[in-house]
Picture 1 (cartoon, rainbow, N blue to C red):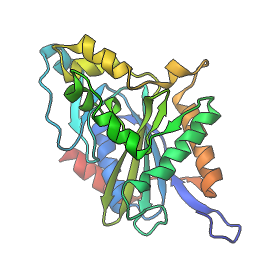
Picture 2 (cartoon, rainbow, N blue to C red; picture 1 turned 180 degrees about the vertical axis):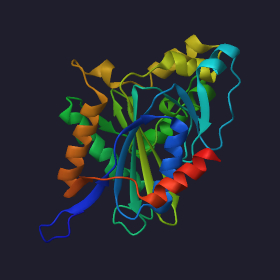
Picture 3 (cartoon, rainbow, N blue to C red; picture 1 turned 120 degrees about the vertical axis):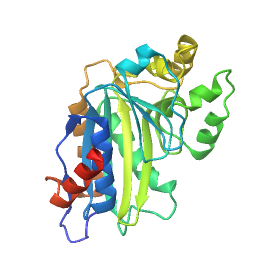
Length: 267
């Protein structure tokens, strides 16, 4: 955030990457452990991947589902995300002493959710911020498939995530280490409820897909024009710079970050 002298704080903007989700998690780990300055990194996956939460059981699926989709586990809390090339991920790494890193873990999400509300408005989307009571109520919402719905990150709500007409559009997660904090966001251009349902429960995929569609959405379902991943990135980056009075400076990975990520990925 600005220093009060007219000079803007510089945040590093890393190159967007469309690649392997496992490598992305290795690089995310490098950011939260090693980044010495505020850093923004956008990414998407090149291969359909089921990303599970740290304590989540690997779902039992048939040969068809196993052969087509990779399964990996993430560090951040939460539940399953079905990542495709139509899902955009965002990492924001902040040093431990940064003013946006609050003692209250939940409140640390608020500014990120507010940035998304404004960025989506730039794209013509009227969105809302999830309150704490609303998030609690969502987890206890009656459904014969409640456990399966709650096994999907976009099947339920957490505070300061973003919804459109009560359906989740932006999901948030967080990792904290001694060095700092990593806030992560995910947004769908296209929410693929059918494939996600098949990954979570191949016995009742149609019923589960209906439940998931009632709880989550993608940009292409709610905007009346074509929106690309780069449109989303540009909108968010613009709002971030204007609201926080920072300057995003294109940069590269530090050598120590590269070595850490590559060692973790190849282990």
